[in-house]
Amino acid sequence: MIKPQDVPTKSGLETRQAALINLHTNLEACRRCTGMQGPPVHGPAVLSPVMLIGQAPGTREIEQGRPFCWTAGKTLFGWFAPLGLDEAAFRERVLISAVCRCFPGKNPKGGDRVPDRQEVESCRNWWGGELDLLRPRLIIPVGKLAIAQVMDFRLLNEVIGRQWSYRSPDGWESDIIPLPHPSGASTWFKMEPGRTLLRQALELIAMHPTWRAWMDQRGP
Image (cartoon, rainbow, N blue to C red; front, side, top):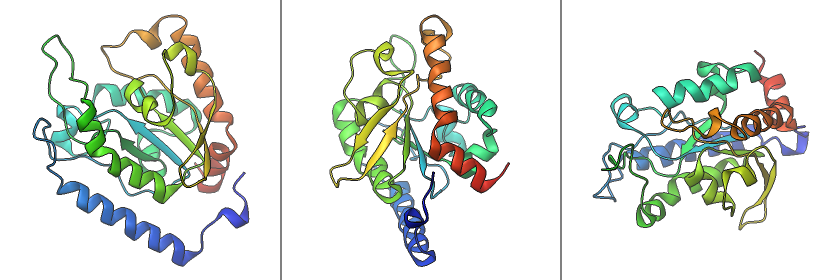
């Protein structure tokens, strides 16, 4: 439950909103990684207690200038619709972030290339800045690369379907509920045990006190 002492003052909200908008403005001008194809993508500057972290945009996201706008997005938002948010509502109420904000290009072996270590590090301050500004009570990392930024793990089977704790370097705490990547090329969430673990993870999100309070507070 969101407690009264946890709700920022109006002036505090305005300051954080301005800082988030400024961060996104600076992000739009970023051209650090020569191997990545921009322009950088970000979602609306939503001051939400829930933050979703993806991997990196694809070509359609670069063209349209918004995250999860194609096949993977249809699958992702299909997961959340039964939890009370269709795509439009999700974009309005949840901050959609990503490990990298430009398209990494195609993998010669098929699919999109996974950003390398240097590219991930170069982009860290963007999602890290969003995380620090929001201090969300629920973090939803989507896919292996995103999960690896907020917790140590080896296999998806070991972390999806469970809730984990996060503690920032500054000492604030949050919960993590990881999800698999909704890529059309992935079969992990379509087969067992992935299918069951995905269902368990979505049930945990639906029951999480922050998710429930945020849905009640904002209405349908």
